[in-house]
Image 1: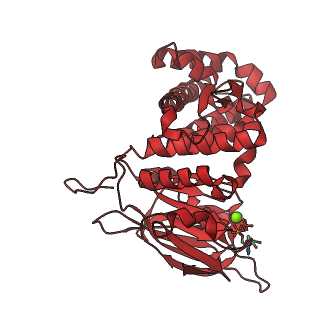
Image 2: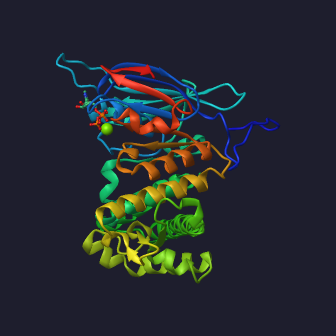
Image 3: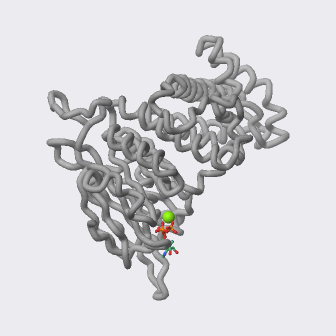
Length: 392
Ligand SMILES: Nc1ncnc2c1ncn2[C@@H]1O[C@H](COP(=O)(O)OP(=O)(O)OP(=O)(O)O)[C@@H](O)[C@H]1O
Ligand SMILES: [Mg+2]
């Protein structure tokens, strides 16, 4: 986003200072009929009682990344429910500001034309953007209480989580994931017809192998970098060690990408009849799992205590934020929903200090305003009541 020749201040970590969201407008969105919120591009604390609308705000921000946001909600569920019948569709707009540059205006909202639910994304009110385009503008990372069970859920949740983290570092990853899914679906559809046109199948499998290897390599590269984050950087949290368990990722550790592409393409060809029978693709990066270990205890996260799993997840998110703060492309945004409430005062303060040090705009929520007293005057603090935000 930075034009050539422009200069900007950088925090010690290398992160752009004064870059972040400065305006958020919600219309017919969940509990908000309308919300007009302006702030500085620095950290934002939102407090308010249960049901005040804190998570709804973080969710609206998370929609400026690929997917359906931090609750993975159905798009129509985001439309404000009222007693009065309404046909109004929800929308969210924001300004992303960078030091000395005109703010960029982004909008997203529900579109029901063409008889199905779609999410429209626009820049400056005109230019349509794809979901993958968003990753070049904003790098959004979030942690919510609903993610507490990530390590014991199905592999698909961890894979989606891993891919979202990779979006922050590889602007083409989101489009690779979407393209791979399309190619694999298309291959299965062709196989189902049983009149499969072999040259077209060959082409689909060749492309799927290329894109599949690219996305597996990006996952591996991210994990290797994350595992190098030093102990002392996250001393207040347990250090996680990550492994990626997948056919392509495993082969990429010991073989050249081109060889792995060839191998995957060959396996896809061999598996045609099995896949035709089962209606599933037996092998590929859509089966990969992220395995997290509690490093000091050499224990898989799935077998760690509930509290340890929570701390490991926060540690993983903060390690990613630390790594992201050294990257220059796009404006990073960290959304932490109800995270500080569960930490003891020492860890809470360490987390808040680290967030300030990273210089990345972070939005945090909580019910207890005193939980943020350590950063009073150093973070913007708003209290939510009756759908309105009051600066504290
Ligand atoms: N589509 C919708 N239309 C109207 N209201 C909704 C819709 N979806 C959710 N809500 C309401 O929004 C309110 C605020 O929810 P939100 O999750 O943002 O609260 P919160 O401040 O994060 O609360 P907590 O502290 O309990 O996490 C809830 O009362 C919820 O019922
Ligand atoms: Mg909430």
